[in-house]
Image 1 (spheres, rainbow, N blue to C red):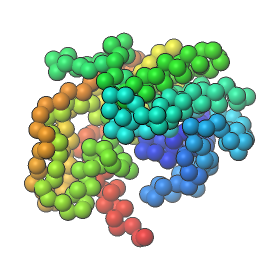
Image 2: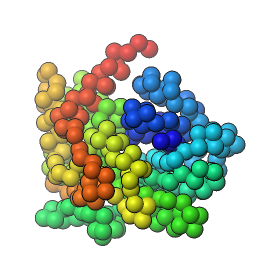
Image 3: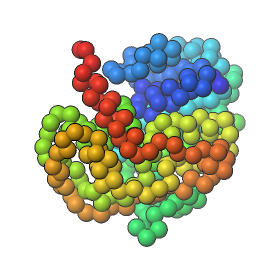
Image 4: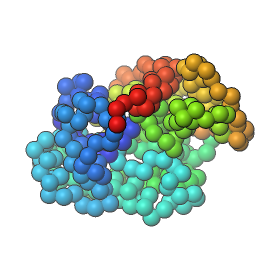
Length: 316
């Protein structure tokens, strides 16, 4: 396929681009800056044209020209503020609304303007779901929606408003609700990235909030495969969960990290209380696309640590 990826310089966007290239697809990407960040794989730098786009503004003439030249089959809209704590507490900040909500609307309008009329895969989030109880944490796509914090509220608003606009403009829109994704090239302030940064810097004790947060963690490379499969086979009238489908704890992730280092540091929990996040029921994704997660948690964590150490060793 020919693919246009917004937010391609981000964690998930970069891995998606790598996967598409491996599948023989043509890729063009947009990012806030027209320069790739440090640590970007050379293949992306050499093979993927990068066009600057601030999604709080309408596309530039240069972006429209590049998109028309590509003639995309799919527009993957990954651009967002994806760190929940940066989107406000109970209510979203104006910046989060401008990027996460208005940006999604601009992506749909861009797809409608292009002659190829690409379908849009909208990267949403598990944070759109209502809080769950520890005794019944599994959620399918029909579970109650009701985000408690600003980030989830922007993602739910993006789903609803972009979905309505897509129907009005005749654009196919597939909603992909990503659960927590981990892997190499992820930077803070995210759980695993923050822990790895402490280890690399030699901080001791290693500070973690809690070992008892129950979460669904998926390797970003497995998630990238799911996004592509949804572009090819997803039903544009439905949403899809992208997660591992298995309940893990933050302690499981921590143990995998401690097992990957030669001299594990001592650990101090700063808020040692249980937490419960939704766990993905991925029945719909599997039935529609045949997708299955393939990367073990220990591999995900070890690869993330290895990548960060390689950046320390890289020449300035």
